[in-house]
Length: 287
Image 1 (cartoon, rainbow, N blue to C red):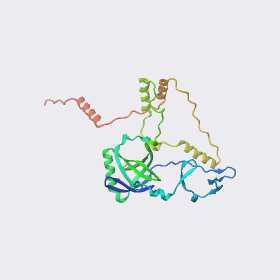
Image 2 (cartoon, rainbow, N blue to C red):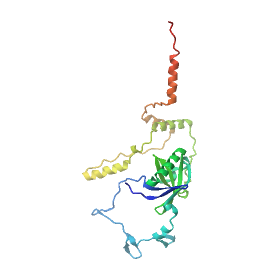
Image 3 (cartoon, rainbow, N blue to C red):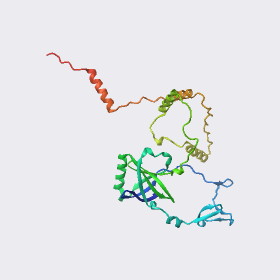
Image 4 (cartoon, rainbow, N blue to C red):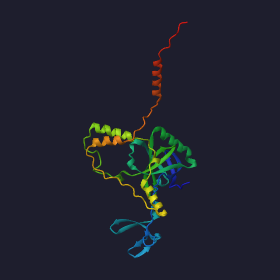
């Protein structure tokens, strides 16, 4: 089983439950080592002290905060442990909010929140209550020398935890916002049709990192002594002059979707009533 990145207690009112955090997602990319071109030897990164003019070892390194140009306050690891808040071992739920109120821009990293044996019952109770009420939880958590505001939400029968950026960490861009242009109703209508033509179910497994796949093929080709075929580059696109014409052409190039059958209980009931009415009342035959 994967190792946890944090363990402690999740508190909910007077209820506490022992839990563990496991990483929920991670990048899976090809990484390259730095080699000396002349002999393909892997080079080493060293820490150089310009004052002593020598390489220093890791055990000689301390953390320092530059409070004035060239002047530092030295902070020891033991001192950091002394000031760790209670959230280092206890994650307290501060409040419950509606999911739609939280903008995804605040989400940073994702984790699975898993209960220990002693916490299974309160964990199940909290998860069920959140599923039924539609609320998500905001809590505080300290790990990796930082206190996070975290977001807890029900997912697949359990609870997912997302660390969140603080409001002062979310950037503001003056040029971002509504574009002051006048759109024609016909343009908006065709844009809706184009979106519907591209609409589908979210299935993350169907998306792939094409560049990663090309890198793997490049490495394989080198190992097998083959030449690599260059990927066809996209043609240079000119700015759109006639927006409506571009929309219509895009829509015409979309593959046709088969019509979807909508079979609801209400619709089936309507169909039965129509069939019943079409038959009409049965006539009695004379004896």
